[in-house]
Image 1 (cartoon, rainbow, N blue to C red):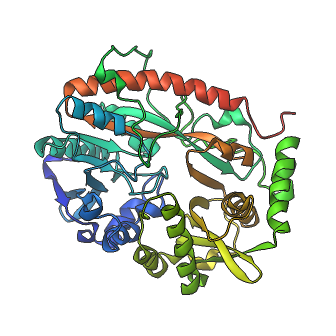
Image 2 (image 1 turned 60 degrees about the vertical axis):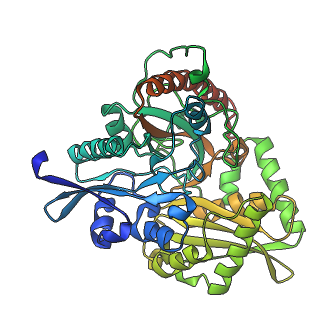
Image 3 (image 1 turned 180 degrees about the vertical axis):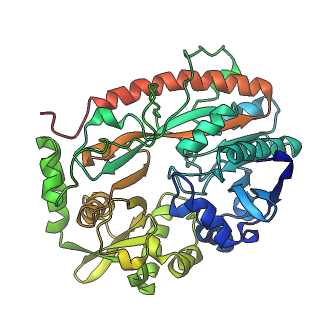
Length: 456
C-alpha cells in the first residue's frame, strides 16, 4: 500500500460514511460486535444520546484509497470522562493541579458500551497502523491532550503497542457455554509485555491512578494478568461440549454455588414472578416502552439521567431488531421488571437455530418493584438459560462485579490503549500503569483460587 495515495478525512458524523462501506469493513475484522455497526453509532447521534450537547463530539477518523474506505474508527472529543468505564478521573485531576488542560481528550470507543471488540477497523495491519498514526497526529495538531482506545480487540492492542501507545487492563466477567477451568480464563485479549514494573516517583504526578470519584468511580481493584494468553482465548478454552440444559450447567458448579443459585431462583419463583422473552421484531412497541420505564427508573434512582434516550431504542427496534433480546418479569399478569440483552447479529429468522458463533451481551436492566434476587434472575439466570437453550457460545456480563463469579461468569482481561501528548505526564502514566499491572495481576491470581466450578 502506497502511503502517499492514502487520504485521511475527519468527519463530523458517521452519517457521512456509506452504511454498506462501513459495515463491510467491520465484517472483515477479527472481533466485530453489533455496537460498531453504522446503524448503532448513527442511532447514538440521531437520538441525541452521544452528541456535543452530552459531551460526545463526533470526529470520525477515516482513511481512503481513492473512493474506497480502508480504515476507520469512531472518534469522539470529550470534555468529561462519563460513560467510558475506563477510569481516568485522577489523570484529569493531576493535569488540573499542574495547570495543564486534560479536556478535550479523544476517545476511540463506543459510547456507554464497555464491550470488548474492534475499535480500529482496517483493511490490513498496515492500514490499521496508519489509522493510529493519523489519529495521534490530528490530536497533536488540534491540541487535544490524549487518545484513549477503550475495550480494544486483539488486533487493536497489537497495533497500539507497536505504535508505542501505553496499555491498561481491566477485568470483566464472561460465561462460556462449556464447563471451564479457571486457569484458562487468565485473559481474553493479548497484551504486550511491559517489562519489570517500575516504582513511581513520589509527587503529584504519581497519584494518577487514585480514584477520582463520581458516577464512574473505579472499583478498588482492576485486573490485568501479566502473563500472555493465546489470541482470542476465552474462559475454559475450546474443549468440551455445550451444556444441554440449565441443570447440566448447575451440575458443573461446586455444591455451595449450585445451592445458592437454586435458592435465589426459588425466591423469585415463590414471589410469583414469571418471565417471558422476545427477540428482534417480536419485541412489541409496548414492551420497548415498558423496558425504557425500567431503564430510566434505574438511572434516576441512582441520581443520574439515563445515558440513552427512548428514541435511541426506537431506532434500534427499527434498524437493528435482530440484535436485541428482551426478558420481561411479570407478577399477577403485570410486568414489573425487564432486562435487555444484545446478540451478535444474525438474521432474526435464525433465532430458533443453535449456532455456537453467537455471543450474548448483558446490557440494561430495571425494575418497578423490588423482589429479592430479581436482579440475579433477570440479568444472569434467565439469559444463561436462554443461551444454553439456543446454543449461544458465550455471555459477556459487562464491566465490574466480582459477584458475577458466583454465577459462573469468569474473569477475563479487557485492554485499553493510551497516548498522551504531554511528555512528562506520559512518562508518569507509564510508570503508574506498570505498577498497576503488577497489582492487578496479583488480583487476577487471587480470583483464580475462587473457581465456582467443581475442582475434581
